[in-house]
Image 1: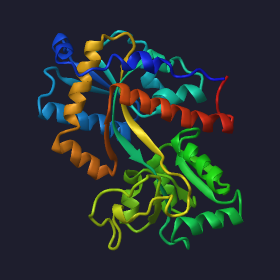
Image 2 (image 1 turned 135 degrees about the horizontal axis):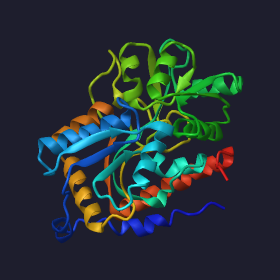
Image 3 (image 1 turned 90 degrees about the horizontal axis):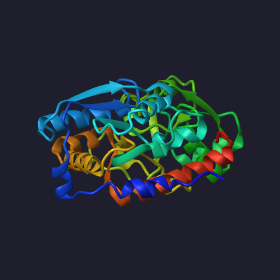
Length: 331
Protein backbone atom coordinates (compact mmCIF):
# COMPACT_ATOMS: atom_id res chain seq x y z
CA UNK A 1 0.00 0.00 0.00
CA UNK A 2 1.31 3.43 -0.91
CA UNK A 3 2.31 5.90 1.75
CA UNK A 4 -0.30 8.50 2.51
CA UNK A 5 0.60 12.14 2.04
CA UNK A 6 0.90 12.79 5.77
CA UNK A 7 3.58 15.37 5.00
CA UNK A 8 0.76 17.74 4.11
CA UNK A 9 -0.42 17.84 7.69
CA UNK A 10 2.98 19.06 8.84
CA UNK A 11 3.59 21.56 6.05
CA UNK A 12 0.13 23.07 5.99
CA UNK A 13 0.44 24.40 9.51
CA UNK A 14 3.37 26.51 8.31
CA UNK A 15 1.10 28.59 6.10
CA UNK A 16 -0.37 31.53 7.99
CA UNK A 17 -1.34 35.06 7.10
CA UNK A 18 -0.26 36.45 10.45
CA UNK A 19 0.87 40.03 10.16
CA UNK A 20 3.54 39.30 12.78
CA UNK A 21 4.93 36.39 10.74
CA UNK A 22 5.07 38.52 7.61
CA UNK A 23 6.94 41.24 9.45
CA UNK A 24 9.50 38.74 10.78
CA UNK A 25 10.78 37.66 7.37
CA UNK A 26 11.31 39.06 3.87
CA UNK A 27 13.73 38.22 1.04
CA UNK A 28 17.21 39.63 1.47
CA UNK A 29 18.46 38.86 -2.05
CA UNK A 30 16.94 38.28 -5.52
CA UNK A 31 14.29 35.55 -5.58
CA UNK A 32 14.58 32.75 -8.13
CA UNK A 33 11.37 31.55 -9.79
CA UNK A 34 12.06 27.95 -10.79
CA UNK A 35 9.76 26.93 -13.66
CA UNK A 36 9.15 23.19 -14.11
CA UNK A 37 8.48 23.49 -17.84
CA UNK A 38 10.18 24.72 -20.99
CA UNK A 39 9.89 28.38 -22.06
CA UNK A 40 6.49 29.14 -23.55
CA UNK A 41 4.64 26.36 -21.73
CA UNK A 42 1.66 26.84 -19.45
CA UNK A 43 3.73 26.76 -16.25
CA UNK A 44 6.24 29.19 -17.74
CA UNK A 45 3.45 31.59 -18.66
CA UNK A 46 2.00 31.23 -15.14
CA UNK A 47 5.30 32.10 -13.45
CA UNK A 48 6.07 35.03 -15.73
CA UNK A 49 2.63 36.54 -15.24
CA UNK A 50 3.15 36.36 -11.47
CA UNK A 51 6.59 37.90 -11.88
CA UNK A 52 5.27 40.80 -13.96
CA UNK A 53 2.43 41.53 -11.51
CA UNK A 54 4.76 41.52 -8.52
CA UNK A 55 7.09 43.94 -10.31
CA UNK A 56 4.30 46.25 -11.51
CA UNK A 57 2.63 46.51 -8.11
CA UNK A 58 5.90 46.47 -6.16
CA UNK A 59 4.77 43.55 -3.99
CA UNK A 60 8.37 42.58 -3.18
CA UNK A 61 11.43 44.74 -2.69
CA UNK A 62 13.83 42.19 -4.19
CA UNK A 63 14.08 41.44 -7.90
CA UNK A 64 12.99 38.13 -9.47
CA UNK A 65 14.97 35.89 -11.83
CA UNK A 66 13.13 33.17 -13.79
CA UNK A 67 14.93 29.85 -14.42
CA UNK A 68 13.43 27.11 -16.62
CA UNK A 69 14.10 23.53 -15.51
CA UNK A 70 11.50 21.47 -17.30
CA UNK A 71 13.36 18.22 -17.96
CA UNK A 72 11.72 14.95 -17.00
CA UNK A 73 8.20 16.40 -17.16
CA UNK A 74 9.24 18.91 -14.50
CA UNK A 75 11.23 16.53 -12.28
CA UNK A 76 14.42 18.52 -12.99
CA UNK A 77 12.94 21.59 -11.33
CA UNK A 78 11.67 19.72 -8.28
CA UNK A 79 15.01 17.97 -7.75
CA UNK A 80 16.71 21.37 -8.02
CA UNK A 81 14.33 22.63 -5.34
CA UNK A 82 14.86 19.59 -3.12
CA UNK A 83 18.64 20.05 -2.96
CA UNK A 84 18.14 23.70 -1.96
CA UNK A 85 16.80 22.70 1.46
CA UNK A 86 16.39 25.73 3.70
CA UNK A 87 16.76 28.26 0.86
CA UNK A 88 13.82 30.66 1.15
CA UNK A 89 14.80 32.48 -2.05
CA UNK A 90 13.76 29.73 -4.49
CA UNK A 91 10.06 29.64 -5.37
CA UNK A 92 9.09 26.76 -7.66
CA UNK A 93 6.13 26.81 -10.05
CA UNK A 94 4.44 23.60 -11.13
CA UNK A 95 1.17 21.70 -11.17
CA UNK A 96 0.08 18.51 -9.43
CA UNK A 97 3.18 17.00 -11.03
CA UNK A 98 5.01 18.02 -7.84
CA UNK A 99 3.38 15.19 -5.90
CA UNK A 100 2.35 12.84 -8.71
CA UNK A 101 5.62 12.39 -10.64
CA UNK A 102 7.26 10.26 -7.90
CA UNK A 103 4.48 7.68 -8.32
CA UNK A 104 5.32 6.94 -11.95
CA UNK A 105 9.11 7.36 -12.03
CA UNK A 106 12.00 6.74 -9.68
CA UNK A 107 13.18 10.26 -8.93
CA UNK A 108 15.72 11.87 -6.65
CA UNK A 109 13.11 13.70 -4.61
CA UNK A 110 10.00 12.98 -2.57
CA UNK A 111 7.00 15.29 -2.17
CA UNK A 112 7.68 15.70 1.55
CA UNK A 113 11.00 17.33 0.64
CA UNK A 114 9.06 20.28 -0.81
CA UNK A 115 6.97 22.87 1.03
CA UNK A 116 3.60 23.78 -0.56
CA UNK A 117 2.88 27.51 -0.57
CA UNK A 118 -0.22 28.06 -2.72
CA UNK A 119 -2.36 26.95 -5.61
CA UNK A 120 -3.50 29.91 -7.70
CA UNK A 121 -5.66 28.58 -10.52
CA UNK A 122 -7.19 25.42 -11.90
CA UNK A 123 -6.65 24.38 -15.50
CA UNK A 124 -9.78 22.97 -17.12
CA UNK A 125 -9.83 20.03 -19.53
CA UNK A 126 -12.04 19.65 -22.58
CA UNK A 127 -12.76 16.88 -25.05
CA UNK A 128 -11.84 18.11 -28.55
CA UNK A 129 -12.34 16.63 -32.03
CA UNK A 130 -11.65 17.89 -35.55
CA UNK A 131 -14.13 20.52 -36.68
CA UNK A 132 -15.14 18.46 -39.73
CA UNK A 133 -15.64 15.24 -37.71
CA UNK A 134 -19.16 13.79 -37.90
CA UNK A 135 -19.49 13.93 -34.09
CA UNK A 136 -21.33 17.05 -32.98
CA UNK A 137 -21.63 16.10 -29.31
CA UNK A 138 -19.72 14.02 -26.80
CA UNK A 139 -22.31 11.24 -26.65
CA UNK A 140 -22.14 10.49 -30.37
CA UNK A 141 -18.35 10.49 -30.32
CA UNK A 142 -18.16 8.09 -27.37
CA UNK A 143 -20.69 5.80 -29.03
CA UNK A 144 -18.52 5.72 -32.17
CA UNK A 145 -15.45 4.84 -30.10
CA UNK A 146 -17.34 2.08 -28.29
CA UNK A 147 -18.44 0.62 -31.62
CA UNK A 148 -14.80 0.28 -32.74
CA UNK A 149 -12.69 -0.19 -29.58
CA UNK A 150 -8.94 0.43 -29.72
CA UNK A 151 -9.08 2.15 -33.10
CA UNK A 152 -9.68 5.82 -32.19
CA UNK A 153 -6.58 7.79 -31.19
CA UNK A 154 -6.69 10.07 -28.15
CA UNK A 155 -3.73 12.44 -28.03
CA UNK A 156 -2.32 14.09 -24.95
CA UNK A 157 0.59 15.75 -23.24
CA UNK A 158 3.14 13.18 -22.05
CA UNK A 159 2.47 9.62 -20.89
CA UNK A 160 1.27 8.70 -17.39
CA UNK A 161 0.35 12.35 -16.90
CA UNK A 162 -2.89 14.33 -16.59
CA UNK A 163 -4.14 13.73 -20.13
CA UNK A 164 -3.60 9.98 -19.99
CA UNK A 165 -5.12 9.89 -16.52
CA UNK A 166 -8.24 11.64 -17.83
CA UNK A 167 -8.35 9.29 -20.82
CA UNK A 168 -8.34 6.36 -18.40
CA UNK A 169 -11.17 7.94 -16.40
CA UNK A 170 -13.21 8.43 -19.59
CA UNK A 171 -12.70 4.79 -20.50
CA UNK A 172 -13.76 3.59 -17.06
CA UNK A 173 -16.82 5.86 -17.03
CA UNK A 174 -18.08 5.05 -20.53
CA UNK A 175 -16.66 1.69 -21.62
CA UNK A 176 -14.94 3.30 -24.62
CA UNK A 177 -11.39 2.13 -25.41
CA UNK A 178 -8.88 4.50 -27.01
CA UNK A 179 -5.36 4.21 -28.33
CA UNK A 180 -3.55 6.86 -26.25
CA UNK A 181 -0.84 8.76 -28.13
CA UNK A 182 1.49 10.96 -26.01
CA UNK A 183 3.16 14.11 -27.35
CA UNK A 184 5.64 16.61 -25.94
CA UNK A 185 3.07 19.03 -24.63
CA UNK A 186 -0.52 20.04 -25.25
CA UNK A 187 0.49 22.38 -28.06
CA UNK A 188 1.79 19.42 -30.08
CA UNK A 189 -1.39 17.46 -29.34
CA UNK A 190 -3.40 20.41 -30.68
CA UNK A 191 -1.41 20.53 -33.91
CA UNK A 192 -1.77 16.77 -34.39
CA UNK A 193 -5.54 16.96 -33.94
CA UNK A 194 -5.88 19.88 -36.34
CA UNK A 195 -3.88 17.89 -38.89
CA UNK A 196 -6.09 14.83 -38.53
CA UNK A 197 -3.33 12.57 -37.18
CA UNK A 198 -5.37 11.78 -34.06
CA UNK A 199 -9.13 11.67 -33.51
CA UNK A 200 -9.39 13.68 -30.27
CA UNK A 201 -7.49 15.20 -27.37
CA UNK A 202 -8.21 16.44 -23.86
CA UNK A 203 -6.38 19.76 -24.08
CA UNK A 204 -6.79 22.75 -21.82
CA UNK A 205 -8.67 25.69 -23.39
CA UNK A 206 -5.53 27.69 -24.08
CA UNK A 207 -3.80 24.79 -25.84
CA UNK A 208 -6.48 24.43 -28.54
CA UNK A 209 -7.87 27.98 -28.66
CA UNK A 210 -5.89 28.94 -31.76
CA UNK A 211 -7.05 25.90 -33.75
CA UNK A 212 -10.61 26.49 -32.59
CA UNK A 213 -10.53 30.11 -33.77
CA UNK A 214 -9.12 28.90 -37.08
CA UNK A 215 -11.98 26.43 -37.53
CA UNK A 216 -9.75 23.33 -37.37
CA UNK A 217 -11.04 21.76 -34.13
CA UNK A 218 -14.13 21.99 -31.97
CA UNK A 219 -14.82 21.29 -28.27
CA UNK A 220 -17.46 18.73 -27.33
CA UNK A 221 -17.57 19.25 -23.54
CA UNK A 222 -15.66 20.49 -20.50
CA UNK A 223 -14.82 18.31 -17.47
CA UNK A 224 -16.17 20.82 -14.96
CA UNK A 225 -19.28 20.91 -12.75
CA UNK A 226 -20.23 24.24 -14.36
CA UNK A 227 -19.78 25.76 -17.78
CA UNK A 228 -16.78 27.98 -18.41
CA UNK A 229 -17.01 31.73 -17.93
CA UNK A 230 -16.74 34.32 -20.68
CA UNK A 231 -19.49 35.63 -22.92
CA UNK A 232 -17.27 36.57 -25.88
CA UNK A 233 -17.49 34.39 -28.99
CA UNK A 234 -14.38 32.48 -30.04
CA UNK A 235 -15.88 31.42 -33.35
CA UNK A 236 -18.79 32.99 -35.22
CA UNK A 237 -21.29 30.92 -33.26
CA UNK A 238 -19.63 29.66 -30.06
CA UNK A 239 -17.80 30.92 -26.98
CA UNK A 240 -16.44 29.14 -23.92
CA UNK A 241 -19.72 29.45 -22.03
CA UNK A 242 -21.55 27.65 -24.85
CA UNK A 243 -19.62 24.42 -24.29
CA UNK A 244 -21.68 21.91 -22.27
CA UNK A 245 -20.22 20.15 -19.24
CA UNK A 246 -19.22 16.57 -19.98
CA UNK A 247 -21.70 15.29 -17.42
CA UNK A 248 -24.61 17.03 -19.15
CA UNK A 249 -23.20 15.84 -22.49
CA UNK A 250 -23.34 12.19 -21.44
CA UNK A 251 -19.90 11.44 -19.92
CA UNK A 252 -20.42 10.76 -16.18
CA UNK A 253 -17.33 12.60 -14.91
CA UNK A 254 -18.15 15.54 -12.67
CA UNK A 255 -14.80 17.27 -12.64
CA UNK A 256 -11.15 16.98 -13.68
CA UNK A 257 -8.84 19.92 -13.10
CA UNK A 258 -5.11 20.55 -12.74
CA UNK A 259 -3.87 23.04 -10.13
CA UNK A 260 -1.23 25.69 -10.80
CA UNK A 261 0.95 25.31 -7.72
CA UNK A 262 3.84 27.11 -6.00
CA UNK A 263 6.44 25.49 -3.72
CA UNK A 264 9.44 26.27 -1.53
CA UNK A 265 12.24 23.86 -0.61
CA UNK A 266 11.93 21.88 2.59
CA UNK A 267 13.30 23.23 5.82
CA UNK A 268 12.30 26.84 5.26
CA UNK A 269 10.90 28.97 8.12
CA UNK A 270 7.14 29.32 8.50
CA UNK A 271 7.56 33.09 8.21
CA UNK A 272 8.92 32.71 4.66
CA UNK A 273 5.98 30.50 3.65
CA UNK A 274 3.59 33.09 5.09
CA UNK A 275 5.35 35.94 3.30
CA UNK A 276 5.10 34.33 -0.15
CA UNK A 277 1.53 33.11 0.42
CA UNK A 278 0.54 36.69 1.24
CA UNK A 279 2.31 38.07 -1.84
CA UNK A 280 0.68 35.50 -4.12
CA UNK A 281 -2.73 36.21 -2.59
CA UNK A 282 -2.24 39.88 -3.46
CA UNK A 283 -1.23 38.88 -7.00
CA UNK A 284 -4.49 36.93 -7.37
CA UNK A 285 -6.51 40.04 -6.51
CA UNK A 286 -5.07 42.28 -9.25
CA UNK A 287 -6.79 43.19 -12.55
CA UNK A 288 -3.80 41.74 -14.43
CA UNK A 289 -4.34 38.34 -12.82
CA UNK A 290 -8.04 38.43 -13.67
CA UNK A 291 -7.14 39.22 -17.30
CA UNK A 292 -4.69 36.29 -17.38
CA UNK A 293 -7.35 33.92 -15.99
CA UNK A 294 -9.90 35.07 -18.57
CA UNK A 295 -7.40 34.92 -21.44
CA UNK A 296 -6.38 31.35 -20.61
CA UNK A 297 -9.91 30.20 -19.60
CA UNK A 298 -8.70 28.86 -16.26
CA UNK A 299 -10.71 28.83 -13.05
CA UNK A 300 -9.57 31.45 -10.56
CA UNK A 301 -8.99 29.60 -7.27
CA UNK A 302 -6.52 30.61 -4.57
CA UNK A 303 -5.68 27.99 -1.96
CA UNK A 304 -3.23 28.04 0.94
CA UNK A 305 -2.94 26.49 4.39
CA UNK A 306 -5.55 23.91 5.34
CA UNK A 307 -7.54 24.47 2.14
CA UNK A 308 -4.45 23.67 0.07
CA UNK A 309 -3.69 20.60 2.18
CA UNK A 310 -7.23 19.28 1.71
CA UNK A 311 -7.16 19.85 -2.04
CA UNK A 312 -3.77 18.16 -2.53
CA UNK A 313 -4.77 15.14 -0.44
CA UNK A 314 -7.97 14.65 -2.46
CA UNK A 315 -6.25 15.19 -5.82
CA UNK A 316 -3.42 12.88 -4.85
CA UNK A 317 -5.84 10.10 -3.86
CA UNK A 318 -7.93 10.43 -7.03
CA UNK A 319 -4.92 10.26 -9.34
CA UNK A 320 -3.15 7.55 -7.33
CA UNK A 321 -6.18 5.31 -7.76
CA UNK A 322 -5.90 5.58 -11.55
CA UNK A 323 -2.14 5.01 -11.45
CA UNK A 324 -2.62 1.84 -9.43
CA UNK A 325 -5.36 0.51 -11.71
CA UNK A 326 -3.25 1.18 -14.80
CA UNK A 327 -0.12 -0.37 -13.27
CA UNK A 328 1.91 2.84 -13.60
CA UNK A 329 3.19 3.01 -10.02
CA UNK A 330 6.90 2.27 -9.72
CA UNK A 331 7.96 0.00 -6.86
